[in-house]
Length: 424
Image 1 (spheres, helix red, strand yellow):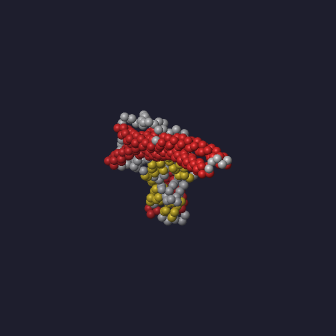
Image 2 (tube, rainbow, N blue to C red):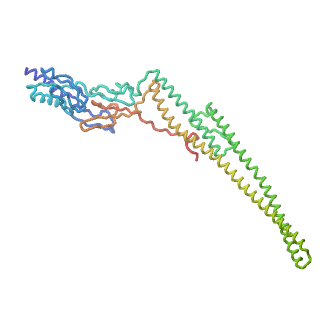
């Protein structure tokens, strides 16, 4: 009996000695933040332990450390072993049993299964996986089916890729149409005599699509510019007529003013003769009536000239308003086109990324590890810690691994006619 007890105690000591220690990140770059957990492994919620109480099968069995860090055992109830090493937990249970329950109890505690390692993010099978000593992040990713999105059936993955590719093509086609429309609006804004499509970087200017869009926009350009020219011409043709009327009325007014002045002189003479008794009164009265009629005609001509001046001013305003309305129409269309271009650029980048994902799922393109960032969340006695890791970082029980796909850097667009910005 003494030899058996000694052997069991020695085995327990060996197991406690061989418990894993917290291994720092291996192979990580100098910028990685690795937790410094030295010493033996300590019990944490989620660990499965096998406890053998010698000669007491009813007290032995498999137990799980609960969220409070306790084991619920027969007779003992809740035993707090969270944060204890394997040897400390074994001794605590043994001491509890010796407190009036068993005489010189012998207890063996073995960690049967450590907390699982969880992984999510850019992996095909996210979830929890059994912990193994010496396991690296690369091995956990392999257990999760490798990098990439959730695994789908090959046929479904190919269908999703085709839809994503079609979406990209539609957006690119719409973007091309908006670029050609922008060029047409800029030509209208500059009142260019004709609409030409310059070299569009990134597009084949001889393609059928560009020809189709150019033909449609050129037709709009021709019709709108012709309508604008006709409207201005119609207004401007009224200017010569008004100017001719103004010239005629001005001459007539000058003639009438000379006649009026002559009559005034004649009236003054007759008035002098009348005072001398040389002219009858009715003769003077007749000349005075003629003077009044001449004055009335001068007033009428002046009123007609003022009316013509007002009409000519109104005509100038209408011409300027027509020009301003056309420019306003072009500017509104240009701003709307540029806004749609900006939205297309954003949506197109997202759609291209989605197409890349779908291509990887369908096996058309391999996943690029350099596009991923690995973060590990680890809970220790000191608290929770999240740090950047590498593929060769050693994982520990309960680690939560997140494989995040890096956001691609925005690529600059050529600053030519296909740039979604207002013209300078």
